[in-house]
Length: 485
Image (tube, rainbow, N blue to C red):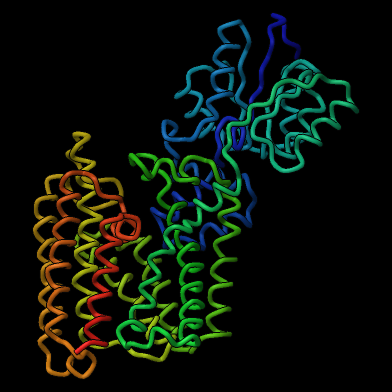
């Protein structure tokens, strides 16, 4: 059938083109988040074909159209073209129901084509469009190699956020078939910058906790132990990055509702979801390979425990009130214990107790900050993906500050312990560390109360100038107490 009105027909692909995302992958992780125990059902559905998989997922989940990362440059151009009289068609390999929900949300499309009985991709999409609008009867906007077959029958080739090699293939199609090269709509940030943000290299700073047993044992000048610590640091960093990627895929809709997390590479569509899926097992495999090859087996068990706890946290624990903050405190503490295991130094009762309470306080800071922002936006329901209400934040402040002050008490009891004199020449000098810690904990909670706290207090502590001065001064007090009597 030809276009009887001789209007320009603009056909737009969805995944990777109109949105900087992939609805199939989004649906899979949304399904896994809601039904984690049905993972093997996905495998079974996939064996029955892509069409069956898409249909079953669409029966159970639907990514929110208002939260998807749209290509705004392309969207503005489409709206302008429609105002000029063009007919807009959304043609996608995604399930037809998902496509219609997006078309309804945007309210600019005159027709919608999607996967129903056949997977509407590549040559299947071309045949459907040619049958409806005729050879050269439409312009087409795409981004992937699957779109090359469609471009062959289009009158004009438009490209949006092209995959690697697609621009060259589109030019070749233009030369071979004589159709016109149209516009390019690329709104992606630089790839490697997005990749670095996606694996959260900056979060690796938390792994300095691995070196705490080295400092506590006064063996911080032994090069072999430092080298072991660096290897353990790298193992935890790679393992954590793998978990961050998985967590961001599972939490993608919640992140898009968050005031700052919406800018994360996966939530914003700046980093391809398929690349994240590839990196998750790669980073995890490198992490455990290094651990098994270069470090004691005991460290590998702690690393495995850390990974399993983070997985449990991502799927379940972070949505259970109070269990979530205890889990966060344990995740911080495991780094300390694992560092001791890697360097064969062990971890004392005092170090473990101190870590438990101070990290519990910082975990409460993290939740308090999220609730503070939710309350400032006038939200009265539970925060997305969590079990807390904004009205709970006074209680969290009480519990968190109390935990922090208990860590000061633990430090004071350690200083007063008779065996401490075996490690330090001047126990009296160590008392200076207590008011330093009191000041820092009080300041952290004051900043949190003012809404000036980072979402992650550990990262805040490593970036904040005052906190860095406090840490250096704190360590200097212990060093001077050890060498001067």
